[in-house]
Image 1 (cartoon, helix red, strand yellow):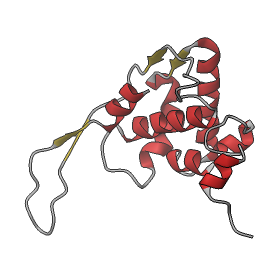
Image 2 (image 1 turned 135 degrees about the horizontal axis):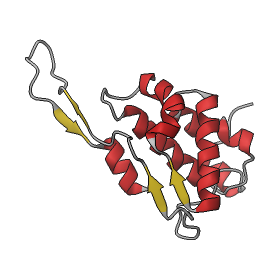
Image 3 (image 1 turned 180 degrees about the horizontal axis):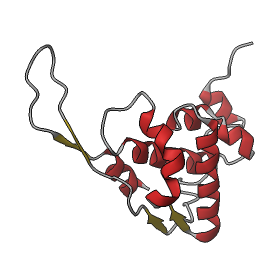
Amino acid sequence: MGRRSRSAERRDGKGGGKGDMDDEELEVHDSVMHACGGRREVAREIRLLVDEAIDSGILAAPRSRCAEFLSPLEDADGERDGRDRGTHRFLKAVTVILRLKGFMSRDRQMPIREIELTGQPLLAFVAPARPGCAPAGRPEPVVRALEMAVHL
């Protein structure tokens, strides 16, 4: 039997960020797993941080607290190079989890009023991708993690 379309999931209230998933379903959701580099243990750690942030109103994610589980994210394939790769994936996972819990919509804003990212790299400089044998130019700034933090 095939998988239902996303629109069908949204119509019957079983998907689309309605907040009706339990913790285990949330941790193994395709979008969460993609953001977490396919690592369930990383998804669990990030979900716990998000749950704490929802209760307290503060997403406390300094590098000293997240370094252990961010290391695998920094090594995961699928993103461009740069020191901010783990931070970007972390913030992406936070965004996805909040959406799946039913927040970040016009009807239900997230209750997080402060985000602490002390020590997290939000900007990286990487050599631009050049086709063929073209010489590498000056490193270019990559601001994807900074953009994601501002989006939150």
